[in-house]
Image (tube, helix red, strand yellow):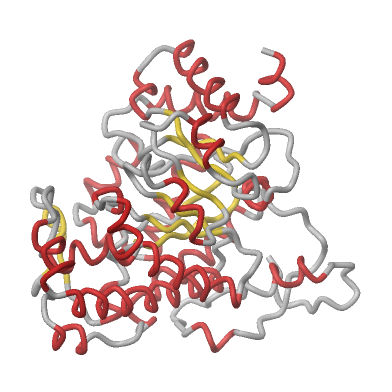
Length: 395
């Protein structure tokens, strides 16, 4: 796919030029910081952008685009077979060829409207000087938890050579998908990443980081600011490599009371989004926070183009509470994919109706569950392609 042609003579408007200038592919073996390609040239021709990109921006579309969080993973037989040959998760998520192959597995099976990079929210941590491992039983393990200002000061700006496999994979995915679907990147929110860095890994209580909110606020603020700037740079890197939309996972933001979220998550999300939008104003950014029913209005103040809604919130309620100029994503209960085709269709139709028509990206309210029947996933994707807004409105 040619991406080096100038805008002159293409008939593209200014907004299209701003969108296209974001993508200049990263060659194999190459890594770069965002500033290096600030003047990347737009693609040739006024090719219509993927359905998901247009829906995220609020452009009028005939149906809701559909992709699923964790659409590449253990529920697929083809993934399990690959994992037997490559048992290390970090090998699978940090080897360009494997990232591309795994990311394309659901694309080859179901043709979703979004193809998300197979990666992990912890993947960029070595880029700022944090080592980690992933244990099959314990999950993520941070070698040295960060709990002092001196440790925060030792963190450095993003070193993109540590994540060059991400850039190469996104560029290859963009070429493979060939604009038939949107290529998605993603990052973790500062608060969510900080929970791992401070707790030393996964936690269900968040005692150490929540205590630091009151006992060492200056340390927590310094860490969250460092993470916000690093993730903003990482998003720009992904956009330059080929990502057409990027999702920010504030996975553990819902663990904070609304007042504390406004202090310890919201400002750093706004910092990221403002930084990215200053350079790439037309690239859609999605914000998803699990357990965010009490935070929806606050999520919408961050500047994100799309708010992901989990399955515990009624989509009609979400549509009422979020401004009409912000798109929604979600929020079918992932457990419904274990049910009959009729039950899946009923849930999908209900979600589409309550989404209000337009500005809606159909998704699950959480990731695909391990053990989910592939037939259930296939049926939901088939429904998404068949059910236009007009059809949903008539039934």
